[in-house]
Image 1: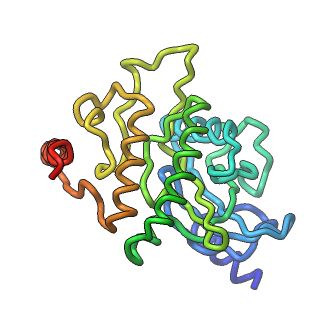
Image 2: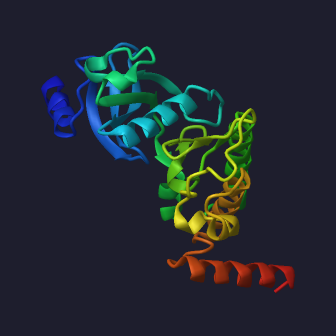
Amino acid sequence: MAEKCDCIASMYGYDLGCRFVDFRPLGVGANGLVLSAVDSKSCRKVAVKKITISDARSMKHAFREIKIIRRLDHDNVVKVYEVLGPKGADLQGEFFKFNTVYIVQEYMETDLARLLEQGTLTEEHAKLFMYQLLRGLKYIHSANILHRDLKPANIFISTEDLVLKIGDFGLARIVDQHYSHKGYLSEGLVTKWYRSPRLLLSPNAYTKAIDMWAAGCILAEMLTGRMLFAVTLPTTLLLVMVAFVTSVSSGN
């Protein structure tokens, strides 16, 4: 089994030494590949995200993501256990010395996107998940962080107890009050179907409200089983939004 696990890890370019075994592919996050594994030190199953640092831009993104996840500790946010370098080296804040870093985090059995592929949720389940989503989002915003990529695939679910946790902070951004980002925020990176009108009209000037809009779109998707604004072109998306809001306002 160990040889097979090492082979799978090598296949995906993972180099964490002998501590982690039983690697399996999980998915791709905003900034890197994610595999599941068993931590032989703690005997628990974990998710391991690999971030490759190849230039100044990728280093900046990696530094930002690591800084953000180290701020967060909440029941409705995926827990990060540690950040390691090649061979499982302890980074101790000096990750810029490495070309690869690994984020070892809590393993979650599934995500909301996969659940929705199986059909529409019951109203009771939608309420339960929405409550937890808003609870986690309130905490994230209280830490002066914008997630910027809320979507069902980044909302993870424990199938055993139906606990929901927000994850993948690869596109998140810190907006501390002691300095202003106004006019300097990079273009909103929310997946197109969950973008707010503000992002479409002013892609470089936005607030925490963009996450709230995405959460509303996710609620609609949980209740209807389909994306609320499933169109491709930004101009078309805005027209569909206006038509929808007008329809709701008129009571149709």
